[in-house]
Amino acid sequence: ISHHVRDVGKVYRNVTSAGNCQIDQSVAVLTCFNSEDTSVVDCHVSFLLSHSHRVFISNLQKEIEKQTGYRSSRKRRSEAQYDYEVYHSLEEIQSWMFETNQTHPDLVDMFSVGKSYEGRPLYVLQLGKRSRPQKKAVWIDCGVHAREWIGPAFCQWFVKEAISSYQYDSVMTRLLDQLNFYVMPVFNVDGYRFSWTTDRFWRKTRSKNHKFHCRGVDANRNWKVKWCDEGASSHPCDDTYCGPYPESEPEVKAVAKFLRKHKKRIKAYISIHAYAQMLLYPYSYKYATIPNFSCVESAAQNAVTALYSAYGVRYRYGPASTTLYVSSGSSIDWAYRNGIPYAFAFELRDTGYFGFLLPESLINPTCTETMRAVKAIASGLLKKCETDRDRFPYI
Image (cartoon, rainbow, N blue to C red; front, side, top):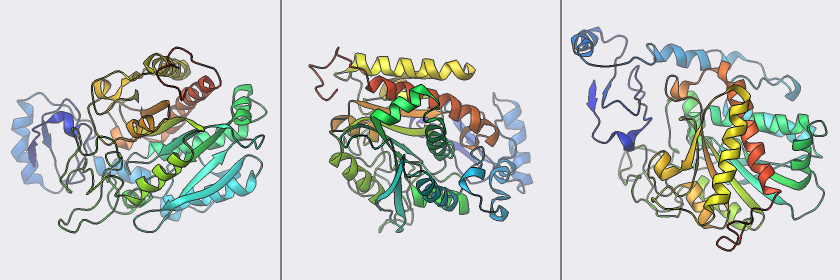
């Protein structure tokens, strides 16, 4: 199958499960081969040899099986034995959340903000020392897009590191003493589970559409801010489908409701995605400078510098519209518009070689460096950035 991409920017990092294939942002022709379709492969060999091309993953199915093959036979382990350097199913993550809450009641509280389209609870962990009721807070969500497995892996890593380093690491101790962290390991629970059971490259939610057979909405195009404008699709079969109306997805609506309720205390919104090695902030939907640009830009620079200090991995940073692409209805634009002064989206490793199939061997370094970046952002909240206060009083 050869598919000529009309607008590469709109399908950047789009991956199809129809055979062994991946598309990179710079590729204008996507060629998919099923291993059994030898006649199709033969047909394309001469074409590929005469054109510039690069094979990222020669056997996609084998890479998928490396990450999912033995999971069904894996025995449940206690929190102390939990392996943070492998990917975990939704059921494993939720069991881990329950046990973490029970084991560390002095630092952790667990609650649900609502239910998904398929009726699954949307669990959140609150981390922080119960010192005073009205502490500033940081929201972190992972797994908005189902196939980005490194996201939930990082959220679990963050919780583990925060708890284990409390009273041993002075920075983390200060953060947990003075801030609350709301951590949502899997935002898109239905889609994430589907990516484990059926389609490893599933991106969207799993809601049904009454006019088309295609299911799901892009949970990062469904927020009520410039909804379904540039960078989002109105067609239900597209991966960037914005939904029938803003907050049509129960997952988006539930999180938006929680953020609205607590927006006076939440000073930073952080959403973990993959992949591109970028740290993005508003605006996503337009080419313009946010009112408190210098404060946010400084926070982003400090974060990527801290990240680089771990393994020398470079991240680009800047407004999402100019650094990555224009997209409407995004969570960071919504958070910013609703008074959260620091709204960031991380695009974690890598830059395309493994893509969504980031090997488990890279979970540790990816999470370690990202942990430094998030700590840098959170630490900045404890200081005053006066530069833009007149233009953005929520700082």
